[in-house]
Image (cartoon, rainbow, N blue to C red; front, side, top):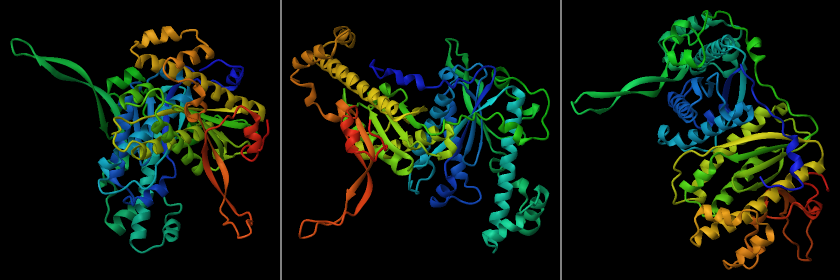
Length: 525
């Protein structure tokens, strides 16, 4: 990032490293998936196609991130366990959970048609995620047992509930009927009234699914004598077990024992409150501006493979802007956003109580929905270009205590936009002229703004400021008023307005912008 007088705002970023020897678990949950499943007409109580889609996404996540060695999921939830020695992104909770939830979201949208051939995706799905710190292998064992027990309880209740409704009871009557009933009563209800042996239901819905990596011998070639040459290959498998934390199941997989450790005893009673104490709870400071900054993950490679125009692809930038508009329309507490290249900063109002100001919920919900919008809107901006692989983003939340510091943060990002864009414009003009990338870097090394402007004149760009303003100043997204009152014959109107999200390309460093839009942040620097 570029150096400027605004650099000091970085000091407000708080490190969130998960310290050794804690084991790291990332739990991902569907955001408002009850509504999503109803609108998309999922089969109740369990849609096996939807469950298989989630399992396929979990497999992709496990294969994408080598440090994930075990995953367990059911319904719209999945828990991903990283090996105990992981240094994945320096064990930073915000980075890990946002990348995992973003990639899973991207894969979910990308694979939708593969599983639901005749069903349109009506709106972008999104997920939330949080890190669970397991202080020991015993805590991990208790956590996984808790989640599998939750799977059983929820599925048994849902099966009973939908059978009762199917056979004439109202939803309220079914809820009342099942109130305070235990496992045995529900088991008997299903068998005696509806002829359903609960133990005969598909194992996936009763026990959930495990994703793990095993090593198998594969024949890679044959030697001169015709004998097979074998090599160990890692293979990702989906398995099911009635007790995923039993020693007998765990001991079947030496890889798990090596990467995580083994269970000493089989676990019995679970205390959920004990497990919840290990949840990574990071509440953001009250009465502060919250900035959620997201960045594309490995977007240099992504832009190269998708043949983005260099140094700026207007279609890609407009896609990012469209996603930002979608975020502000979805989360009413977001009041302003600023973006450049593959980065966007979203500002949440000071008094926001979204997700009780839990950093993990806020960041991952924003990152997930942004990712989902990016994939679903891809065709709108690149109608003739296939999405070659699922893109992903990471994010973090930072609190700024005053309006002045907040506007300095935005100024920092806009200065960074200018410096980077001017450099990139020079760099790509040099490359287009025949210089190698290394030669272009050496020519630009140590040059300042005036020297770069002179260099651009050699390539027919007489004035850098004539380049599109979106490239030079980035994009600002915010709520604004639109006059919708028809003008009367005498040229007057009664002042009827509606709010809408707009995208503008302007100088947000100067006070004039904020003075002309005082309602955006309720501030005037």
